[in-house]
Structure formats: structure tokens, C-alpha cells
Length: 91
Image (cartoon, rainbow, N blue to C red; front, side, top):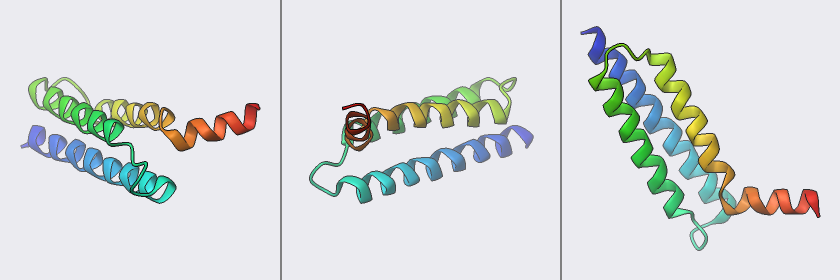
């Protein structure tokens, strides 16, 4: 039961953070420049972390959530609005 609850908690975090990423990118870029590739990478990464959490019970819930949070930040850094903001700050 504990394993199932922790997997559900990780799944909820993955779904909510993916939805937040999608909403933020949609409001920043609109439909024409939406980063579908980054969204796909985020979904596949989330599924991978959930399956690892389900398979290996020694992975703590906070470790899985933290790993996905860092992965989401890394994916968000390589989207067009963030790259444009860095270009404007540097140049």
C-alpha cells in the first residue's frame, strides 16, 4: 500500500508540473511556436521516472520528485522564450 501511494504521489507531481510547463509555454509563445518536442521529452521523462519509482521500492518519493523537478527546469531552459531572454540579457 505504501508503494502504491508513493507512486501515486510521484505521478500527481509529474502530471501537475507537466501541465504547468504546458500552460506557461502556451502563454509565453502561443499556438504557433509551442515547443511540442520539449513537451514530448518531458512526458517521456516523467513516464520513465514513474516506472523507475514503481519498479524499485528503495527510491524515495522525494528523490523522484526532485529529479523530475530538475528535469523540468532543464527542459524549460531550452525553449525559445528562455533562449530569447538570455540573448537579450547578454547582447
